[in-house]
Image 1 (cartoon, helix red, strand yellow):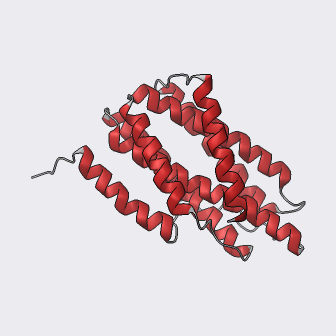
Image 2 (image 1 turned 90 degrees about the horizontal axis):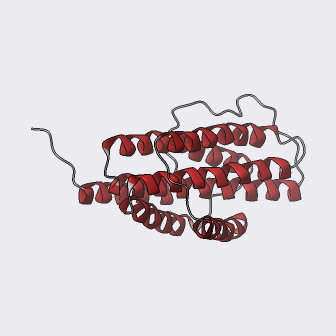
Length: 213
């Protein structure tokens, strides 16, 4: 007999996944690393630390994305919305893995605050889902729009010649734009300006801390 999963079941499963993702290595990606055979640039120590700081921010952002989608999927009311969230989350796993690989290449590590980022983002995602699928999709759209903007900023701030980091961020930017389009097509609501500003402010705190810690 097929088991019917309740919202509580999904939340428990999400918590289990949270512990694995936020404290351990990223799951295996479904797609190959876009850095491929790109030649690693010769970076001096300051450039290496800067590139690692940027990639640590992006890795932490992907931890947040996993948590947001998990929280939203756990409280989504419509199966189609939940499936869309899961599909986007699967692509975000690729991003998580690619960023982790690049951090290792740069002799660095993910943010030590990842469990905190996950917990906070899961709570926000669950609340967005409880507000209704159209609001939840609106949150996805705005999140992805802001992520796309900060990826463009990071592309402009990478050390010259860092082709491996650039290739990863280029593909991530393409994927994030597609996720925003998906959410809009599914019926996303436009979030109030105050909410968008609060999201940007919160993301700014995370980026400032993750760059260093």
